Length: 538
Ligand SMILES: Cc1cc2nc3c(=O)[nH]c(=O)nc-3n(C[C@H](O)[C@H](O)[C@H](O)COP(=O)(O)OP(=O)(O)OC[C@H]3O[C@@H](n4cnc5c(N)ncnc54)[C@H](O)[C@@H]3O)c2cc1C
Ligand SMILES: *[C@@H]1O[C@H](CO)[C@@H](O)[C@H](O)[C@H]1NC(C)=O
Ligand SMILES: *[C@@H]1O[C@H](CO)[C@@H](O)[C@H](O)[C@H]1NC(C)=O
Ligand SMILES: *[C@@H]1O[C@H](CO)[C@@H](O)[C@H](O)[C@H]1NC(C)=O
Ligand SMILES: *[C@@H]1O[C@H](CO)[C@@H](O)[C@H](O)[C@H]1NC(C)=O
Ligand SMILES: *[C@@H]1O[C@H](CO)[C@@H](O)[C@H](O)[C@H]1NC(C)=O
Ligand SMILES: *[C@@H]1O[C@H](CO)[C@@H](O)[C@H](O)[C@H]1NC(C)=O
Image (cartoon, rainbow, N blue to C red; front, side, top):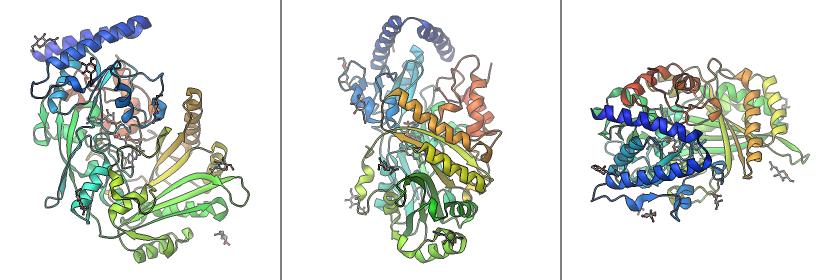
């Protein structure tokens, strides 16, 4: 019965919201104020006496609203005066606040977004094309490591740096295979199928997830046993934001040696770059899985001509000693010309700082810093490479990159464990047959919207050039490298068709199973955003 009332209410609300969008600006503002009032009243009404909520609700008229909003904006492209602001931010500290938020969002037919670390490349956790409010998870940040079990419970609002730091605090031979940027939030990262430099040995973050606590659309708190294997499958790479609010994850720790070896070396065009990159493409996905060598292509000022020239930077994490790494690279990748003096031995936790280019001697406590040392506007796109780019392709790439100047292109080698996990074990489908995941990255420091368009276009041009060389039908993409160019869902009558457009790129054949699960666990499409999983058409 209750469900029917909610369905009816959200139906009314839908009509209400769609009229809202088409009415005049003045009406929008007054209607939004109205919804905001109702939301606040509802939230206060539904919070428990022992966990009051009012001091956790920030509306634009509260002086700290901007600070709270900006605290976890990680793409300055969405830090402008014209970016749509949430009606409220609820900085939840107790699960009852999340339950109240879900209930009140339903009652008022308003879109609810969940933000953990705020690193979504398109800002989907804190911007929207429709009126919305934010449930902000940054107060949920405990990391509870159990070395005997080789597991840890990690709250959604914890950042990866906190996860790594807390593991290393208890053991110098354990790690967690996740992203290289320490400020990324566990909340979005793990459920989006996150990866880092342990991927070839141990798979994705979501491959090393053993349990989770979530709040479902009816406000129930569920774990793996009570949510069932379908929902647990969906949140291991399908993106939690389509299904539930994730409170915490139980992750499986992995083993690393006491000392690992790293290097970072750069080569420029006049050092036979085509030969080196060509050889790299053939060997990196087939190397021993203890070795992860990432390649980033960019441009630099030539020391000889003073003009821009191409540069390739190789960053390696090797789970072994210098001698073994040197013989591995000399045997398989001799053109790199790696020398013993390029290699550094250190603990795994120190390698986390090294890999993200922190200066040597940076204290480990830097990993606990929630604020990135610098922020920029940015655009990212992704691709999958199933065969090496031919030499003529590389040579064209050199020319184009010098012309475009700003975008960088990063090659993340697959193979190893990534090729062994079948494509349907989790929603993440990009497994065997992939040599590299590519990331196109452009960063800039101008806030002007026209300049943003210019830099976004540069990224698209580079991506466009790569069309003949990368996966097709579909042209695959990585969910955690959120890219709104792949399509937007307006959540209307065409929702399934719109969803399929980006859905098959992110999930291939797993898209339909995600839709089926979505239709069962959230039939009224409460958990939605611009790229969420749609329900089956009725
Ligand atoms: C500097 C930088 C470096 C990065 N490096 C890597 C990398 O090495 N490897 C990699 O895989 N990715 C990387 N990413 C991408 C990153 O993994 C994704 O953006 C990830 O989704 C971020 O999670 P978050 O919690 O910080 O983001 P948020 O913006 O808070 O959330 C991202 C999405 O998840 C949803 N969400 C967040 N929390 C919850 C929750 N508790 N319950 C339900 N839904 C939730 C949001 O609504 C949103 O849709 C990087 C991003 C940046 C900006
Ligand atoms: C507050 O809650 C009570 C019962 O839970 C309900 O009857 C009342 O309508 C609610 N008021 C508002 C403003 O939501
Ligand atoms: C925001 O302002 C309202 C009204 O003045 C107040 O009740 C509420 O506590 C404020 N919120 C915070 C987080 O200070
Ligand atoms: C975001 O914008 C605000 C207001 O324009 C500004 O004060 C703030 O410094 C910006 N944030 C960053 C990190 O640049
Ligand atoms: C672990 O953390 C505690 C508390 O922060 C600190 O005092 C201790 O030095 C750390 N130990 C290691 C091995 O990092
Ligand atoms: C480039 O390749 C040529 C021919 O293979 C070789 O003679 C030369 O030494 C190489 N240059 C560099 C800088 O490695
Ligand atoms: C190249 O040099 C110019 C000025 O000499 C400088 O502005 C620019 O930032 C440099 N570019 C790179 C990629 O280092």
